[in-house]
Amino acid sequence: MTTPAQTDSTEAKAPTSVVLTDVAAQKVKALIEQEGRDDLRLRVAVQPGGCSGLRYQLFFDERSLDGDVVTDYDGVEVVVDRMSAPYLSGATIDFADRIDAQGFTIDNPNAGSSCACGDSFS
Image 1 (cartoon, rainbow, N blue to C red):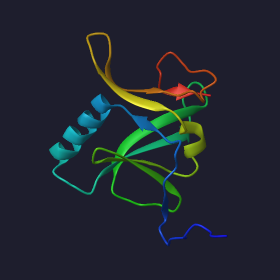
Image 2 (image 1 turned 180 degrees about the vertical axis):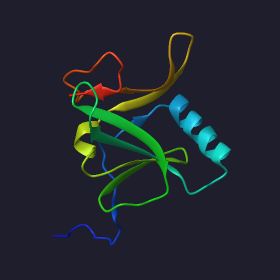
Image 3 (image 1 turned 90 degrees about the horizontal axis):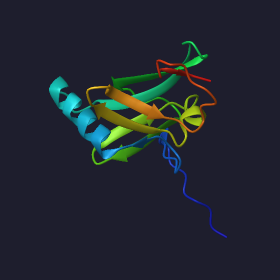
Image 4 (image 1 turned 60 degrees about the vertical axis):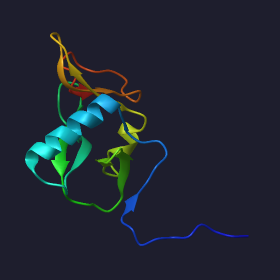
């Protein structure tokens, strides 16, 4: 019987992680290019706060933290910390650029309820 090889990497890949749509990936790539840096990745996190108890945070980050879940989308890395990963598993990040909506949106199947602003959930 063989066992999978273990690595010393502090980052883990998970089959069920955040999904970044092609449109969102293109927007993230363009924003990173505007920053003029090639070491940035999109970090998605869940923090206490907001109207419903938890809120999303999306920001560029160059750090690698122990237990990070990293998924690559055509050269754009999406990073989720180990505490946020269960809340974001299977969530889809999209980018809207319409007259009625503009910015990143998150469709999260784990959210029991959300507030009207769309930035907070429980």
